[in-house]
Length: 152
Length: 152
DNA sequence: CAGTATTAAGTCGTGCACAACTAATTCGTG
DNA sequence: CACGAATTAGTTGTGCACGACTTAATACTG
Image 1 (tube, protein in one colour):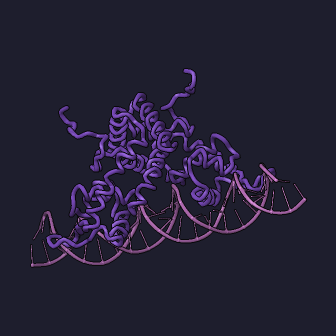
Image 2 (spheres, rainbow over the protein chains, first blue to last red):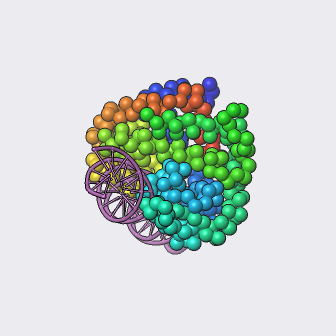
Image 3 (cartoon, helix red, strand yellow):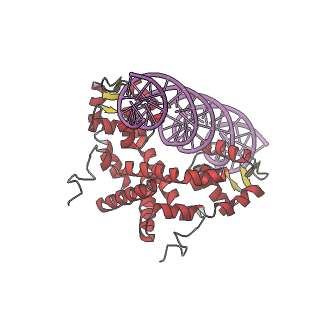
């Protein structure tokens, strides 16, 4: 009781610091800021890094499925993928079996980048400084929150 | 143990779904997306809403202090404040005692908007669907994470 | 007091993020 | 088979977000 305020935290407070949404927004930007210098060495932005994570996991994926995985619109992905293509990390080609769909495939350079990226998650995990239990709890709460807020 | 994967969650995994950073990024966008229709009725974007929260709490604040509260650069705030000024919600004026500093003051319309905004936190809190304990835990973890990642 | 360093706000360029829309292709139903 | 509905990528316009830089004002130091 010594350092905490007596304010209720869930009511209709308009105080910035009571808002979970602000804690979330600030944390998200702080984490991407922490990634920035590491990813800069790889020539990637943070959203580009997320795209590469998906591609290292599953090469030859459609723009649509990439959007589903990352929860991003094609209007965000299209220019982003164009930049990655210009950087020589991937190719785009219309699928023969469905000409509406575009398959994203890693180039050799894109596949090779995976090795250099291997140290990034550990470095960030380190900087985050959460215990394994806190990390697991945070992920669980964030997924629950995302699911609740997305549905209904 | 029935639904959880056997994967370690903290090691150097490059799997998207193992990354706390992605859970955070996705949750943050999902929450702002949920705010969007509510704030649209007020004529605000989400970052503009955050600025208004600060101003309702403390009117006549410098751009600098606003940036400290929201953890945003002047290069982000300057155009944002210009739009809010154009929308008639606030005024900007150089401080007499320090001509480098600019004081942001609510207009009457800006102050009045507070009433209409009063229902927003409750509606969002509702949509988030977390218990008070989960809400508190999430805020605590996000603040710890932000502090860890920002320092050192 | 002079001259440099620091601070505050703002501009500019790049890259998301998303709504609204378009064009091309495929699906589905009569 | 025909033709309207649905699906897939992509374009356009607006608004963040931030690094690098600029300008103006104030603080600091010899």
